[in-house]
Amino acid sequence: MIRFFRKYKGFAGCTISTRLNYRGALLMNIVNASVSLVASLFLWNVLFQEQSVISGYTRDDMIVYLMIVFLMQSILGNGTEWEIAGSVLEGSIIMDLIKPISFQSRCLFQTIGSAAAEGAVAAFVTGTAAVCLCDLGKYLAPERFFLFAVSILMAFFVKFCISYLAGLCCFFTSNGYGVIYMRQVITDIFSGALLPLSFYPEWFEKIAKVLPFQSIMYTPTQIFLGRTEGAQAVNMLLLQLVWVIVLWVFGYFFFRFAIRRVTIQGG
Amino acid sequence: MLRNLKLYFRYSAQNIRGLMEYKNDFIVSTIAGGIWQAVGLVFLFALFHNISSVAGWNMYEVSLLYGCVMFSEGAYTLLFQGSTGMKHRIRTGEFDRYMLRPVNLTTQILGAQINFAGLCTLITACSLMVYALRRLHLETHAGMLLLFGINLLFGVCIRANMELMGQSIAFCLINVSSLQNILYDVQNFAKYPLTIYPKSVRVVLVTVLPHAVVSYVPVCLLLGRLALWPYILGVPCSVVFITWLRRLIFNKAITKYESAGN
Image (tube, each protein chain N blue to C red):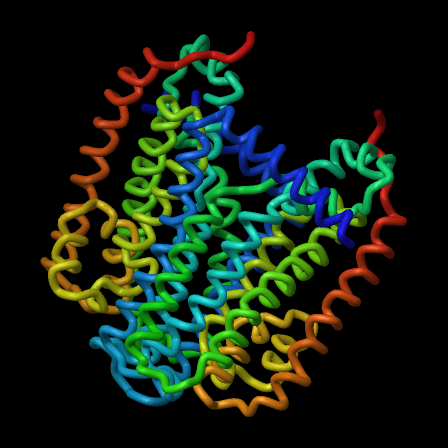
């Protein structure tokens, strides 16, 4: 286990230093993401002037929800897929194949690196905004926060596994855009990044809860907002863990299958 | 003007031939454009599943706003995608070739690329607007609808100018993709009634970044919330102003161009 970490932690460190090197781009990414956030804050602000509760969410709940989604989106961009797509399309994946490392673990540690750099900035921005815009204190109970931290970690792994699978699809399509956009659209809709799942019609909500995507946004937000507590929260965390394992194993075998299809362009 | 238009079509025909070479890519990107719009539509329908109106606007009225924004985006992507690749051409120094040709630079930039992702967006936008108009049972005469249609074209023109303005900054700063994304995301503001924003934001949305002229103003006119004469005075002024502003910025920025070698 320790050997495993020693082997791969370099990838994470490398990605962090690259990100910190391009500080301007890092900050611009956050500003960029904030534009849509500001637009939706205005929208929700007006909606909550007209009614105090929408689909079980109060104004403060909604602001916290938006902030958590913002934080998760910044931690988990679509960098992983573009990285994989790029290395397949350019043929630089050959450099990974001849090294005694696992491609899946390498991608994971690179994603951890970029998530750490971007997450730190995003956490600062969202934290400040949440404190200014709503009464954050009522959501902060220590044991709930602990569960939230665990669920964020799990959500990260689920999101990574899904991105990894989407990235591997580029082995077959030899084009990044279609697959990656599709993955992003599906995750946005079914994870609750767009709207809390309870806003959807009942049948749609039921479908969303069966799929793995809800582990990415829905679980952490529900735990933080205190909508699921005690045993139910632990159950949701276990469900996240199950999805991590299932998707990781699937990714492992899918890579072994997909690698036979790869065509290296040039040498 | 006529020559530029003719050249633009020549460029585009050439681009289509280029795209046809990679058939799979072509199909995938067309579909991706449509899927991308699904997010906005799901948001719109799910939101109105829970509420009845946004600042007094019902779902079909807001759908019209969405439709206008999507139309301008789709048409822009389909016809003028070329400007998006400009930053790449500046960075690699490929822009030298453009400077050397005896053809208007804007024509060359806009005609450099077309993207069929825009076609799906356009179709989605039109169906959404037709659906909303049917449900609204508006009693407007054909002239209003014609004006609304013309305004959609103004919208495309405004969008193209705004995108070019954003791209001009690539001459000064080498990495502009984030800035360009920021300008793109401002369109989200145009998807809701202007009245939900504070005054400062409204002023920006009708002057420097006139997204409101693309969506809010024509929809207001169609719904009878805006009189005809301020529209007829205002919108052409806005189109002329943004074109003038774009030319000013573009001409200033182009003097900063440094070739990246040969």
